[in-house]
Length: 235
Image (cartoon, rainbow, N blue to C red):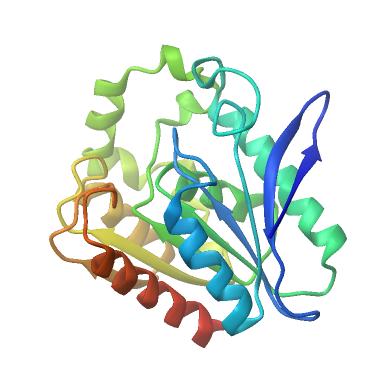
């Protein structure tokens, strides 16, 4: 694994690269909001993709996260999405003519879904994907009304007309939707909206809340294995 800085306009995001085979696929892994690229589950999962499937994995800290600069409270989803686009384009430049997969966890799933509008790639894994009101795309985190966000996530009618999901059917790649059965942050209405939009393969994880921080190592291993198997068959 090597660590480098990917440059944007006047700043950089800290990035880890797990190199796979010379002509293997590339995976961009998008972390959740307030998470970081150095979580143990990434150390467990991404090197396995490299060693067993030859997939090069790229994971970075958004601004305000991990080892990247700035305060998370002063950043909007739009800024983080600019970083996602920049890193994705960096991948295409440095690993040309490769299959590209994107996996997004929670907030990362929201940003990965945004990416389907602007870039083409081969596969998408949405792990308990979050969603936000369209008007909050440019809202700083410190100004977000979290109660209103949760209310929106339970509003099936509003979700059905969300422009982010309205264009999901145009995505040509394969999609896996990972649903946490007892998710306290991402209600069933939200995951149902993603399912209706993408018509994906669905992996329901029984008895699990939003975070994987309080489950056993074996549960995490089983969870990762299901995603690993899906990526393997999608290559």
